[in-house]
Each structure stands twice: as C-alpha cells, then as structure tokens.
Length: 441
Image (cartoon, rainbow, N blue to C red; front, side, top):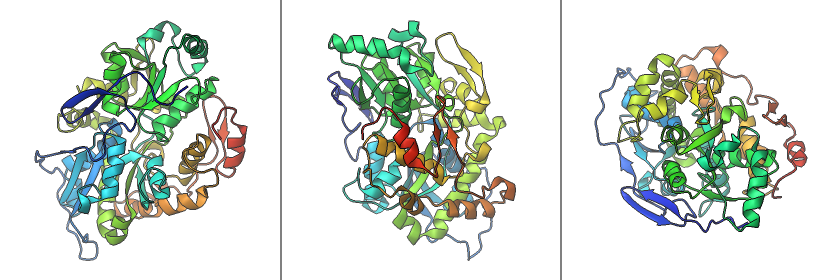
C-alpha cells in the first residue's frame, strides 16, 4: 500500500487552516509562537560564582504542544532558567517535528533554535544527516519523560474494543484492502517514537505497517481534528491528544504506551552540539534548570498547577481536563474501560525517568534500522556515545544536589521486556533484530 494517503488531512500552522495532503507534516520554517507574557519567577536567583557564570544568558528552545514538554515550560514559568543565570531563555512553540528539525538546522543565529523538546531518535537522524541537508552534530542532555503516549482508534472500530492485541484489526484491514478502501495510521514523524510504538504494536499483531496500512505523519495538535473528519483509522501521539479524543467522544484509546513497554523512554532535551561546545557553562545551567523542573513536575502536589500552566493559550491552548487525568494515572480509554495506575502514566523524574540511558537510545536506533530509516551498517554504539551526553546529566544532577543513590551508575538499564514477551538485550541488538518477523530490511 502506498505510504502516502490519498485521503485529505487537516494541516494547521499558526491560525491558517488548509486541507492538504500531508507529506512532511508542515512546510519548513513555519512561524513559531513566542511566549510574550512575562511570568514572575518563583525561584530566587542563586548567587552565581564567576566560575559557574554562563558564557551567554540567552538561548532559544523549541517545544511541541505535548504534555512531556512541561519541564521546559515550567523551567521558564517558574524562573528556573533565571535562577542559574540564563535570564534570556525563550521557549518557542513549533508547529510540527519537521519545523523543529528545520529550525534546529538554522540555529538561533539563523533565526531558528538552539535546542528543543524532541523525539529521542531525531537527534540521531540529524547527526547522521538522514533527515537534514547535511549531518548536524547533536547532543542529548536529558530524557524528559518515560511513558505517557497512547494509541487511539476511530469509533468505527469501537465494537472491536482493541487493546494491546492489534491482531483484531488484521481481518478488518484485509477486507478494506480488498475493497480498495484507503487505510491510514497516523504518527508524528517518520522514525520518531510515535512511529516506532505504532509500528511495533501493529507488527506484534501480525499487521505489516509497510503493506497493510499507510503510515502517515500528522502534527500532534491535528490528530483529533483528522479523526473527526474520518481521515484515519488509528494514531499514535503523546498526551493530551489521546485524552482529548476520548473527551470529545471521537474515538477511544487502545492502550497507553506504558502498557507496551513499562517505563519506556520517550522525549529528550537535546541541543546543537556546537552550541553546547561553545557554551558549556550555559548548557549546564539550562540542564540544571530542566532537571529541577522535572522534579517539580513529578510531584503529585504540583500536577494541578502544572496542567493549569501548560493549558494556557500561549502554550497548549487545551482544557485542563484534557491533561490532568492521565498525568494522575486516571485513564478513561473511551470504550468502557477505566483504570487508575500512576505507574503506567507519564513520569518526569521518578524511576530514573530523566536519565538518558544509552541502552534505550540503542533500541531506538535498532528499530530505525528495522524500518529502513537509517542504514543497516550504522555503528550504533559509536553513534550513541557521540550524541548521548549522560556525563553532562550526571554533572548537572550532582550540582543541584541529587542524592548519589538517584544517579544511575550504568548507562544500561539492562534487558528490556515488551508486552508481547519479546526481549531486547542491549549487549546483542542484532539478535533482537534477527528475531523480529515483520520488518523492512
């Protein structure tokens, strides 16, 4: 089946809306939205020694309207960047992941951004040059969260009550194909986290995402609108968009991704390597602010306030109720199932959520090889060592007084087990790849 759908998708950039075929989710260098409302710092600026003073006080960071961008927003709103001397940090809304990529290529000196809340695989693909005009060295400084994404389906399939087992859709998709009906599964960026969760889920149920359904990119804020007009069967995206779909009774959640892989890695805080290399103290200052913001966001006592902040028009422009419940682990799937389980909900700090395990990045790269997004002969371990700066994370964590027991001593979390019983051993990614039945390579 064609990878490009013939059905029309809604694309929104700024306030203009158009119905168009979506290939790269949005036109390059689409306008970004700047936070122009001043927020009173709640953290007093700490005295900064000359030794720790950042080389610059300004940086531009991008974010997509997804709940896991909250640490960057909270670091801005709560004055944490200011606290560490980064008094001119801007947190800028991006229209889509392709726009984030394009603005990262430009850098702030070219009118773009220096760093971002980003899908973990993207810095690797940028470093390889597979999604950029030329290889762009990148550093991952922290993981922003684990868990907190979802796979949702149209109400057309409500009677099937699909959960982690996608095989219930196999016969339905086969019949649709036979009748020449176009089928679409949406994710947010080819080779990104949502694409990989969606593909893993489909393939585990015997559905080949390369031939049984068209997998297409759609910007996160446009997922619900596209489901409303019937352009897709299923989508994978971060919150609050799965919850909003249910709240608007336009579809239901098959699962939250913590059910696919408990405490799975998700977004990253990444920056251009040249910016970090030129401004190491400034990068460390921002990293300290982000880590503190993650701790704040993970405190249940702060969940209500966090959701009220990020729901504002200048950030997400969505109702608080679309964000809060799933952050609390209260999941209404929209098909009659409800569960209250904070352990499968989004975490920003608990269970080492912030630490950028290299073993997790190795899994993402292995999956991107599986689906042909990066060359099969990529030296993945070397690439991870170049991009993943867990050393800087440890320095920042120690600087803000994180207890030694909360700082991982290994860059590997060990063997990971997925919902279908498949295991990934970071010591032998080839064995994992060889054992997968459905793949592109």
